[in-house]
Every structure is written in structure tokens, then in C-alpha cells.
Length: 464
Figure 1 (cartoon, rainbow, N blue to C red):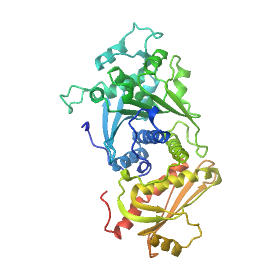
Figure 2: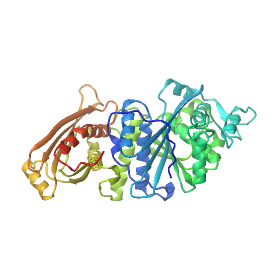
Figure 3: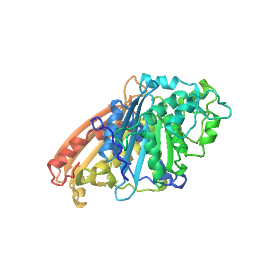
Figure 4: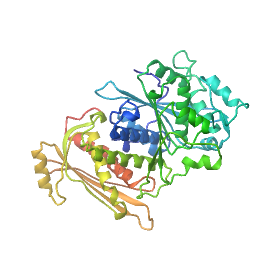
């Protein structure tokens, strides 16, 4: 199926990091039928998409990287007196299969207008089966909060503006809103499924959007909602009505105050769905509610589950490697400060996956650290490799900054005759990202230099 919902192009961004990995086929079966690894993959994908839905630089480059890997972003921007909304329909065909994934993503609070939405806590009735009825029901004053679904006014305003206020003139006969188009597609093709996701405010909107689609006739098995640090959106009647109409997984980091803020400030709001509690990475001092903390958790959970399941590291062909080369990568020397040494396993696995996503035939070794260059090159030759890639990572505490570390990668690329082709050093700090994310950042920061060096010595480069 090709929905053809493209409305505008994506802003051109710098190339960065995390989304080069893990873009594995995701089962379209219900969450209860998925394996733990499939679910961990899906949660990680939603964390990446949620991070990419924000508009500051580091998030935009994640979005651009996802696009490079085949994910199509179709943005829908709407404005009203009540909200300025930014919605992304994210889609990808899974290589070598007939599967397609559709994700509807909403960003969290990122502007003064969004803050106004968050603070508009008055409750309004929630009901109807069409945009007109949605609007009219929210204006009613004769309904009782003890027996009828009521929701947070600001979140409802955002959802209505994003999906049900403005017809898309460039689609069909120009009379349907984005929400109506999505509901029509899903109802007309019951084998299709939509994943809705978001962080903070975005998670709240994802829940209300799923509830609206359910009221428009979309079946429970066609919806899957995964949120990160989402506040409650409605009263007890709302929760009881919709808890069976779509599956909801709420991922909550220990110490995140936002998911319970509305209940404590304004009574009558309750959470529902499956709450998934996770511990914050003790190696980071970032505020527990930030999307970087949630993405860090999704990365760790993925690797923990993969290790528990006994999965072997394999090149992810669907990542579309750009360099057709066989590269020997000896044991990576990763040495972190004792405070973040627990990250070393995750860093090693994640960097391996990044390399698998960019190079068509990586071969990983476990040579001792003291092995000399001649030994490594000779082994590379025996393995039939074209190059030897040596990578060292160091993490040291920045003086007088207790929870800020400098992460440095030093990389050397040789041909198998021992000729140095490329050497580089990249570094960053953990001021705005976790140590794990920082290690991925510095590895990806050298992507262009590394791949250009290979391209200069090879005629087998794949199209980007």
C-alpha cells in the first residue's frame, strides 16, 4: 500500500548518529504475540522517532539519518489559536518482505505555545465519531465528569488541531482531514496497523489520537501506542472506556515527575494502559524526563534483551550499507572512567551495529590489545578483507564537573598491507547526551572521513 500522504519536504540537516542502527523488521502482530526482542526493537524505534520529532539540531539530524535509512517523513504543520502542531507520519517498506510500518509521531513541549497547551488543564467532554462531533462535544456544559469521559483541554486542543481541524486540499477531493484519511485507510484495509508514539506532550496526544481513531471505527488490533514520560490525559471514565479499545504501553523512567504531574496538580486525571518502569542510567545526570534519557534506556533494553535471547550480531542488510568492502575490525579498546565503566558493553555492541549499518562485510575479531599492526593486517589478509579498522574509545571525567565526561574516539584505517589510509580523533561531552549516546555520536562523526578513504581505494562503493 502506498498512502501518498506527502505534503512537504524535510529540512536538510547534518548527518549524525543513532538511527543508523537497529532498524529491523518489526512484527505487525499484536504486542502480546511479539517476542521480547521484537518488542524491544519496536520500543527503540519509537524512541528514535520520538527524538527525531523535535526541531532542535541534535534531533533534526537523527531525523535526517532515519531518512537516509529509508524512512519517509511526511510532516503536517497546523496552527490555530489553541495550538501550533507538528505531526509526522513516518513510513518504511521492510526490505525483502511485504511488510510496511507506519508510525504517527508527535513531539513534546518545545515552544511557549506548547507550554500554554500543557497548562490548559480544564477538563472538557470527549466523544463523537467525526471531527464536527469531536468539536461540538468538547463545547458541551451539560455532561457529568463522574459518568462521562473528560480529558485535558490543552491536549484535546492539540489533537484536534493536528488531525481534525483542517482538510488536506492536496489529498483526494480535498475535504478530509489527516485524521479522517488515516481512519479511512485503516478501516478500509483491516490488515494494516498504525503505531502512535510521542514523548511527554507528544505521548499525551498519541493517546488521544488513538482514542479518536478507535471512535471512528479502527479496530484495537490495528493500533499500538507507545509513549515516553506521558502525563495522564483523562478522567476515570475516559480510562475505563478506552483501555480496551487500543493497547497502550507507557514507558516511565524512575524519577520522571512529569508522568504524574497532572494528577498531583489538578485532581481527576488517571493513567491507564501497561506501565513499564525503567531505572534511569546512573551514569548520566540529565533530567529524568528528557528524551535523551528515554532513548538511552531503549538502547540498553534492546541490548539486554538481545543478550538474554542469545541473538548473534548480524549485519542488518536493511540498513543499506554504502561501502561494499570487507573490513576486519579487531577487538575495540573501550576504556571509560570507573563511574561510567558499566557502559562499555553497550558501547561495544552499539558501535558494532553502526559499522554493520554502513559497511557491507564487517568481520569482528577478539585479538588481544597488544597485537601489533603486522599481526592484525596478516589476519585481515587471511580473512579476505580489504581493510583493517582499529578503534579506541576513552571516557574521562571533566575536572570540576562531577557528572560530565569527555568521550573520545581515535580511529585508524589501514589497508591489509599496513598502509595508513585515514586517521582521525573525535570527541564530545555528556552535557546534553548520555555516555552511551556520546560514544555513538563520536563514532558516527567520523563516518564521512572513513567512508571517503575507502571510496578512494575502491571501485565497489554502493550508491548512497
